[in-house]
Structures are given as C-alpha cells and as structure tokens.
Amino acid sequence: MADTEQEALKQLLKNFFGGAFKDLAQYVTDPPDVQPLVDYFVNDGFMQPKLTEWKGYKMYGQGFNTDTIKWVYENWTPWKDDVIVASFLKTGTTWAKNIVRQLYFRHDEKLMAMTRNMAMPTINLETGLPVKFELLEKLPWKKRVLVTHVPTPLLNLEKIKSAGAKIICTLRNPKDQMVSWYHMTLNFPVNPNATKHFDMYPKDWNQFFDLCFAGKQLQCNKEGEWYMEHLLSWYPHRNDSNVLFVFYEDLIQDQEKEIKKIADFLGVAVSDQDVSNIAKETSFGSLKSNSNTTEKLVNFYRKGKVGD
Image 1 (cartoon, rainbow, N blue to C red):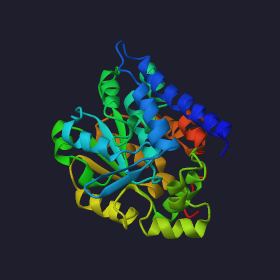
Image 2: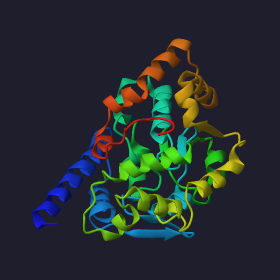
Image 3: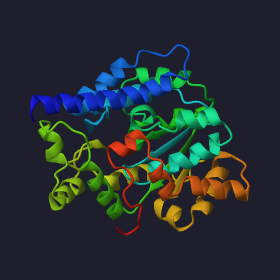
C-alpha cells in the first residue's frame, strides 16, 4: 500500500471516529478529552491492530479491547433501567438496540437525535478505552441502551442484576450469522499491511467458513470457540428475571409481537399504534435507508433475510 493511500485511510478513520465522539460531546457541558479514544480506534483498532487477552478470551483489532471489558467488569456500575443488548456478532444486535431506543426515547426529540448515531465506538462495553464511560455518564439520559458481544464469563452479571439493569440476548441461526458476518468483513476499512486481520478474515468463502467454524477469528472468544460456545454461556441464564431471549427469526416473522414482548420486559407501556409505529421505524428497510455513518462505512445492512 502506497504511503499516500495509507495516509488517506488514516484520515478517513480519524474523521469517522472523531465525528462519532464529537457528535456526543456536544451534549455534555464538560466533556472528557476524546482524542485518546479517536487515536486508539485509528491506530490499535485498524491501522496497526492489537491483540488483547483476558481470561483466555482474545480480541484483535476493530477497536475491541479485553483490557476495557476487564475494567468494566471490575469498575463500571450500571444504572437502574439500563438495557444491555448482549449478543454474538450479526445476530440482531442493532435491530434490538433500535427497538429499545424507540421504546425508551420516542417521545424525547433530543434523546432520539443524540442516540441516532450511537454505535460500536461508543456503546459497546468492550470497545475503546475506559475514558469512554466518563462521556457516557455525563450524557443527558437517565437510562441507557448499550451493547456487548462478549460471552457471560466476561460480564459481571451479578452487578448488572443488582443495579436493576436488564439484558436482551438476541439469537440467530448460525448459518445466517456466518454469511452476514462474512459479507460485513469484506468492507472493513483495514490497513492492507495488517496481515493477521486478512489471515483471520480471508475473502475466499470456503477459507472464511473453515476459520470461523474453527474459532480462529478472535472476536471476544477463546481460540477454538465460536458462536455455539457463546450461546452455551448464555443459555443457563435464559430464565433469569432480568434476561430476555429474542430470536432474529421471530422478529422477521412477527415484529410487532416481539416489540410488545420487549416492551413488557422493560415495563414500557405501549399502545397498538405505538407498536405499529415502532415496527415501521425499525423495519429492515427503514434502518437501512437511515443508516448512520458507522453502518454506511461497512455496508452494515445487506439483506436481513432468513435462510440466505
């Protein structure tokens, strides 16, 4: 890759991540310095991806950081009525997040605007640096919609439950998950010199399948583990009072029914008209047409199908 191309990619990433954090900082009277966050995502995340490890679980690049989830486990205190959408990559995380966002903030124009572009850099518990949580604490919201892709050994479930926070765990057919994940990785804005990234995410589908299935892609997992092990970590908690399982296929089949189920779980009163409106606002077509900058960067919304 020519030096000019590397500089162009680096500038793209700086503008992208800088904008993501500055968009939020405008809602805070005394925001923390977000430049270290921007630098982390640009350098350790994409230009020179770093491997981090905790409890045998590994994360490589794209801003994912086991040091940060360790800090969250040991130091972060959730708020009452926080919602954490906890799921494996490409299993309906963003869909569920947007449904909760509509349920929580649909009557507050300011919070709807503030949360519109909140995505991986800001709301994933395991991305970036701990200073990010200083910004999240100062934003003008009383309850938050957050996301994580980590399995349960990396989450302090007891602290989350005792705080009064709730968890929505989305699940999807693993065949569709892998196909969706494959197509998304093709669009990652990664430095071509980051050879380990391309070793894990080859463009050849057959190679990609073998590596993914064998647990060689280090995304919040132990080597040799994949989506199935992630699900098995959550399965014992399916009946916990603060945990709700939501299936991607059920959202496809009857979205309004699932929205009502989520609303009941969160204790949010909704009318049939509310549910109908939220279903329209969070349909695949609507989410795709209103993609935020993060999602456009990686062509996040592709088909949204079952059995692809």
